[in-house]
Image (tube, rainbow, N blue to C red; front, side, top):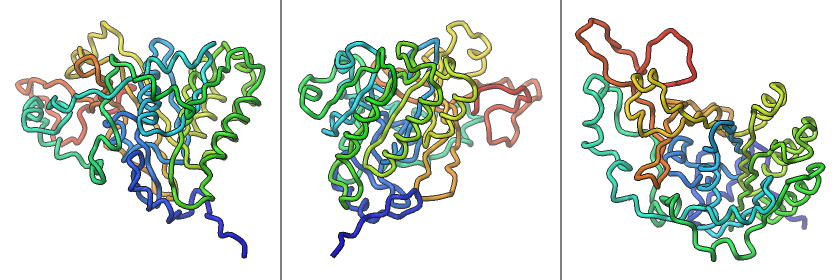
Length: 361
């Protein structure tokens, strides 16, 4: 009798994934999806649980600052802590050296800024407080507690070497690569270990590709070749229990190629730096002096469903709590003087300016 094969299309309901809740690095999601943590608890909450298995996550880099590396480090480190195999590709000559910069779990839970509390609410101006209720997105901490799924990673504390010196880490240098054929073969070999045809999810893998379109790679001017690679990688990832994260600098690509890459992403994020002396932003935003950058969420993966994901906000501030822990916060407008007669009335957003801008509150 022929073996029954699990369907793996974007609209199939994979019932076998419901058994994955017993694994600390996996979390059940809606519509039969399964999440792995991004390594940043705030980002997991923003995305509704984390990164979906079988999805392609693309992060647009900022040419002015390497903030994308913060997200990539946490993603890679969280997977290694869960003993999830990792394939890391980089344009550097020695990609394995980058593993020594991965963060290690710390103890930031003693800080009340990570928890919704009355003390935190008191810092919000009274005229805006009515717009901030209890958080709607809740990361379930059953099955072993929060740290079984997402750790608080200390960026100043390097990950212990035994986590990445084992055979579950594969590093690939794409520097001076004439094309992407070798990387495609390595990815296909890695993804074959996590095929969904085997039924239940016993483990998951992670692929991290840094600065995909870097000028150090000889294929950087072969845009159609790069698009073909990402399309093939997305197709292979969809039928596997793997999350693929790719960072790329859109400023080095033609507008048409950049738009095509963004369209192929299941989850699309971008990061950008904040100018040190932007007086207009300093007046507009509370806590501006503590921000190191901005995170924009352009698209959230919606596997096994056609219902779009609607976020309360799409732009978040990037902060380093205690200069160690990466946190994302909604942008809050600085209090205004109500004596002038102008008011925000009953608007549900923090800004009513008619001037178009890149910030979404």
